[in-house]
Length: 316
Image (cartoon, rainbow, N blue to C red; front, side, top):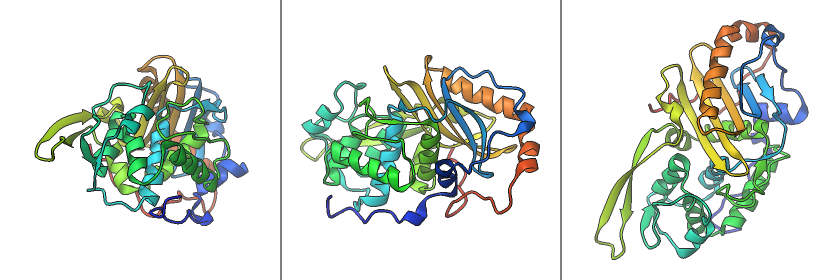
């Protein structure tokens, strides 16, 4: 592993919620609203209350599935935690970055152009550009495969036993996890303030430094998460994903007035908009079934969300 990487995370950093999933201590769905079920179309779903450490809803939540670009979310955590590189550093896009993203959507990160590490992180998490993380891995002295190996190792450190990464983009069908474990990844990522802030942005202006070093070109990218425009809740952070095999996926953290902070993961939806509609259906179901009262009835002593500090409001 490259010298610019820090030592592996300490075992004690595993979140209380992650420990609950891996040891079977996470509280089940409350009986207060078990009788009715939301009309959810996505085949694999989990909804967690981060404030209470409870499962509010699940369907095939422990089924191993390909996770597509949800992989980029965890790649950002590894880069942010361990790669000791200034985010203002410029990195030149290489032919290897282009090859690593072959088979994905078109990219605005042109070979020979230079971008800051900060801009590449925005391109990866907001627009889901498949060339961004191969470039970030390269800037940190690794190949995409090596970054994938480190991501898998880090997942094990966090107690995520079913999660495997072959590379950071999610184009590989070998990148797999479960809805439960993706929700725990999302919780960890949103504890990093600059990553959380990126995922909560609707748009961002990129600056490309063109060959020759004298000219720059600016262009706007927009977040693929359509729920950032919702008036019902604030989006703390999240990531979309799609491949032909994984279908449409979404990991999203919401801050709601009624229910506190919620983590939702939806995987395998057939329609592009289905995952977003499912989130709204779940939210309305929670409101209808008076989730706050139900959670208060089954709250256990000494339970709290494991976090270094409260999350800041999303930048909407």
